[in-house]
Length: 285
Image 1 (cartoon, rainbow, N blue to C red):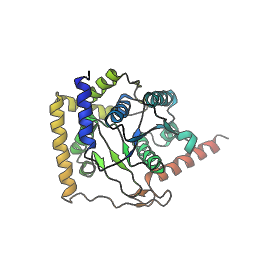
Image 2: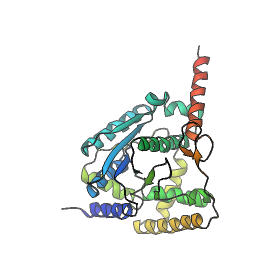
Image 3: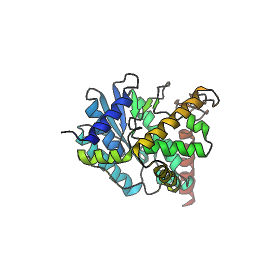
Image 4: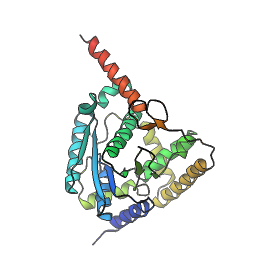
């Protein structure tokens, strides 16, 4: 007998994904945590006819990344799938820990790397869409932060689904109306193995303050869903009225993927990090 939690999670994922244009091959970003592990499981139950490729990015954060990859492999094996792993240090010659030497506030750099690499891998795999496990609280925190900081350009770009544009693969967030608590309950009920440890180098103080604010403002899930709908409508208004111009995209001069500048931030940062490490190595002799 299916539990109420399972039914709610499945129904909300189905309702969200049915809004997307038709797709057949999906990449699911698998971190090893409960959210992405649950997304992989529920998506395959709801859409058994879709081709699913789980992809994991090993960023080289010591034992944390090793454990993350181990759990991601366990989750993929439980689903009967082969995990695709991109090891940053093996592929590019440096880890996020190396990048942190040049960029002390490394979270935004790390996030940019993950978005770029997931898109590049998905494009090379000829996937139709990238699915990530951003949940209801993730959206509320980021949207509330944008509003309070007058980050209207950022807010206008918040979408639960982003269509394909050239070599930028479509992106979907099927958990956008599913709370973190529901996901945790689902993972427990389904016996999904997951890593509970948080990233040891992330600077989360500011994010946690906004998360606590969301919990104070909306103690019930129904209130969170109401706020999410209101903020989503605001983002749509900002986007549709033309007051917030969207950046013009053109091929990066280095990698060819669409970007808002001549050289995309990924290529520019990779170049800087490698030059920095070369100088550091030369100075050690």
